[in-house]
Length: 253
Image (cartoon, rainbow, N blue to C red):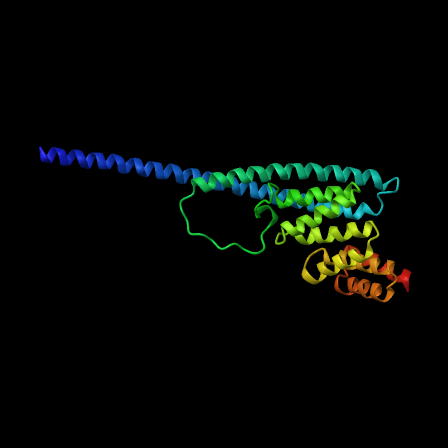
């Protein structure tokens, strides 16, 4: 009687153990599947971010000619493409957020990790329900559409809400561009100066230095204008702004 009971107990324990292993395997499989989904979404986001960056660079290149007959249709076409990419990125961010939530429930308990001070924009927590990329794109769209007051507010809010993302230097630059477009040269100079000082290795530095040259020339400070334009030539000779800086230097000498 005791042997039969003991044997039955061992059998029951074996079934429970097998069930627990199966459940654990199922949870681990769900976790792996979710992790793979996040990896796929991340790769797609990276590709789309590269496309957005390419479109933004082309927009910058044609921006100065958008008022001409040949320049405006091209500018409008690029703006439409930018908005489509923005919409796609927003959907990807939403999908990534949902997958991340699922991952939190599926993953095994783990020790807390330290948070880096600077993170890619798409990996930073949302503020008031909006992601860094979406917040930046909203402000940039206002800039493209000539809604400069909204653009200033949008870029300022972005810099305040998302100070440590990879898009923060871009927001700083376009804030300066917006000030320059409304002829607020004093604030434009302060904004570009801050970008150059705080993000010396950023790809926007040559453009910021060139715009500093233009803005200081507008205020009559030709000595400082020449200094900034010469920095573009000396420090960034292969940049797109180098030729523009050379032409401007010849103009103000």
